[in-house]
Every structure is written in C-alpha cells, then in structure tokens.
Image (tube, rainbow, N blue to C red; front, side, top):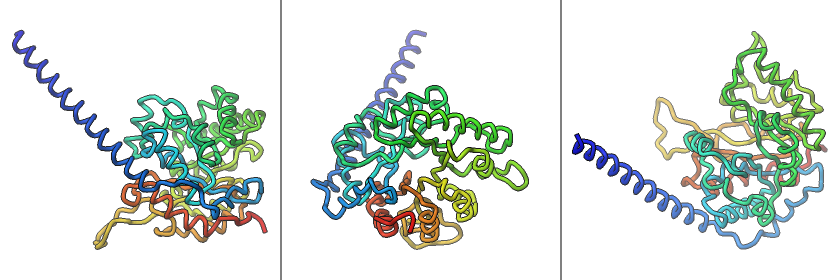
Length: 349
C-alpha cells in the first residue's frame, strides 16, 4: 500500500513539475515576444504634428482614445506599458480609457475571466497608472467601473476618477443579468438614476456602455436598451455607445444613434470583417473586429451621425484579431481613419 501511495505521489509530483516548467517556459517566451513588439515601435518623442491633439480645452474638440483592455498583453512591466502609451500618443490619440480592474489590484478570478474571454490584462493591475498617464502625456477620457461597486461606495469611485483627471465614469453593462425581464430592466434603470445622481453630487457624470444583450425584447415592440434609454434621467445617466455589439445583435444602429442624440457622449468604435489571408472560400467566413476602414461597417455614415449628435470622444476597442498579433499595429492603422474623420473637427457647425 505504501509503495502504491509513493508511486502515486511521484506521478503527481512529476506532473506538477512538468506543468511548472511549461508555465515558466511559456512566461519567458511570452515576455520575449512582448518585449520584441514594444521595442519595434519605440518612440523617443512625440512629433509636433500630433501635439495639436492637446487642444482639450476646446469643448467642441472631439477627443480620440484607446480602451485600456487593448494594452493588457503589452503591460508585462512598467517600461513596456509606458512605451505603449507613448506609441498611442504618437499615433495621434490624445486619451486612454481606463478600467477599474486594470488600473488597481485585481483578483486572480478577474484575471482568469478576462484571459479566457480573449482580453488578457497581463500585469497591468500591478502598475502605477497615475504615473504612467502623467509620463505619457495622455489624458484619461473616462474610467470603466461596475454598478455594484458604485452603489457600495460612490464617493470612493468618484475619487478614483478624479485622481486620474476625468469627470466620467462608465458602467460596462451587467454580469449575469437577465435583460429579457422587463421588471428587472426597469429596476436597473432606476438603479442607474440613483447612482448617477450620487456621482453628480461628487462632480462626476455616469455613462452606460452597451453590449448586444440589451437587444433582448422585453415587450413586443421594445428592447431592454429602449427601456434603459426611456427610463433614465438625462441629468444623471447618459451613454457610451458601442456600435459593434449592436451590429452584432442585428440592430438598426443608425436609428439607435439618432435616438440617443446628444445623450451619446462617447462612442466605442471598431470595424468588422474577415482578415484571414486568401483565398476566401465558401461557405462561411469568420468575421471579427478589424482595423477601422478595413471592414464592412458603414463607419462613414455612423461618424456623420456621431458628429451631428455632438459626441465628445471616440474610443477604439478591439480584443483580438490584431495585425501580426500586435495591438500597437492595429491601433496605428485605425488611427488613420480616426484622424481623417475626427481630428480637430467640431461637434457643431
């Protein structure tokens, strides 16, 4: 019996050792890959051409930014994170949109959830983002948080936003929430009104960010998103509209943007298409997020509506499917479209 137990323990120990060696080896290889990517984009200074983007005192100026989730894989250490932010600045963006779970210490559960969903946060939660933002010269366009955290301590979340120099907090949708239940959605709208009011008393405004689940029908004619729009007070709740997810859900995105009007304060933008190398064979191609202007979304029409709505900021976000698995390359390519459509354009005539 003792020999059997010893044998089992030996096998278990061997398995653990093999896994540990694999994990360490993968970590070394991944760090080398990230270091190579970041160094290939090294920027020593910001070009004068892009310094014009610092015109943030002009209330009509449309800010342009990148969602922090795109940078997770590049944030294995402080130096690489800073270089990545400088690359973003040099590409013509003036802002970054931070996430609570990436700009402060996060649990292992959060890290695993984001990684398995294709949105690794790397070591971002271990870095000093206040220092990184200051050194990069970027601004913080908003801070993504969650409803429960704000409900528990609105003042604390508001102070976090202020620490980063932003007056905008965005709720990124609800986790494990039934968007097909009319009563639940109406209750959600009231919860949003309540925390929006609490944040406004701290000098912070609240925006709601959609995915595709808000398109669930709660009546024969209305979706959950309709209910949220119609039952929230514009004094306390407005919107960061994500057109990709609404297109993914089959919505009439132009109509939704028209309905939001001036309540559409920020726009999460990306394109959608197939980026595999040819030939493009039948029957079905897999589509995913792609660089702006390289997919099939009618971004020109949506951009015109956004400008007419008086949108204050454009935020690029993709989770994967980057050029050469390099988010910096994708950010740079997408910048060409953003600068063409929004650089120094006014939201009103």
